[in-house]
Length: 178
Ligand code: HEM
Ligand code: HEM
Image 1 (cartoon, rainbow, N blue to C red):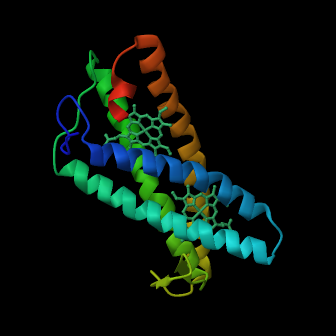
Image 2 (image 1 turned 30 degrees about the horizontal axis):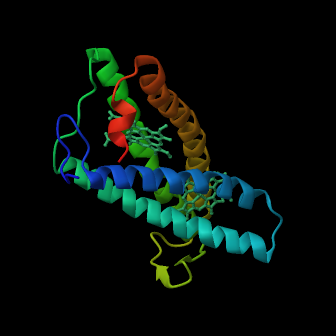
């Protein structure tokens, strides 16, 4: 398996990072909603400990992915019109933007609320800002709006992947797999 992305295929680092982040985000979303709904309790704190740790891992993976992508080329869509190509790249930019906006707003929210982020109960992540109630409220709002947007964009993204595979019967889904 080749490492580099080319005009025709994804290298394994991009594939691995795609499916790993996808898996973690698909755990992270229900975890966030579930923990948010719980009454104050030790379980709630523990689940948010996991949510924050996982979220920081997603941030690191997303940054690695973007850097790796910028270091080379990426495959073009087979038989796509300019409009399709543009829509796909707009969707992918939105996904990258949200993959950064979610953890960053979470980080700001925790810091502004003066709650430390303890990565898997091993290392404390430095606060990104001092305590600040107004900023905490804004970050919380950004987090919520971003999650909602992510759900919409993801539905389109997954729908498009399945449409390529089952309707157009092209290689788009297969080439993202191993
Ligand atoms: C949280 C879940 C997911 C996120 C955040 C995500 C994000 C992304 C992003 C940002 C890209 C663009 C890669 C790039 O241009 O660098 C991409 C490509 C792709 N994704 Fe996802 N994805 C997710 C889940 C899925 C799922 C569940 C499927 C399949 C049903 C899927 C199928 C694909 C395919 C086939 C491509 C390659 C498109 C191409 O080759 O042009 N993704 N994904
Ligand atoms: C891709 C990463 C992330 C996703 C998909 C995600 C998703 C969610 C979801 C679905 C909720 C519940 C709905 C809501 O109240 O907005 C939530 C809440 C929350 N998340 Fe995240 N999150 C991510 C990263 C993070 C990170 C890195 C942190 C902190 C370091 C964090 C901290 C929080 C907090 C404190 C709440 C409770 C918000 C409240 O009090 O309303 N999240 N997240």
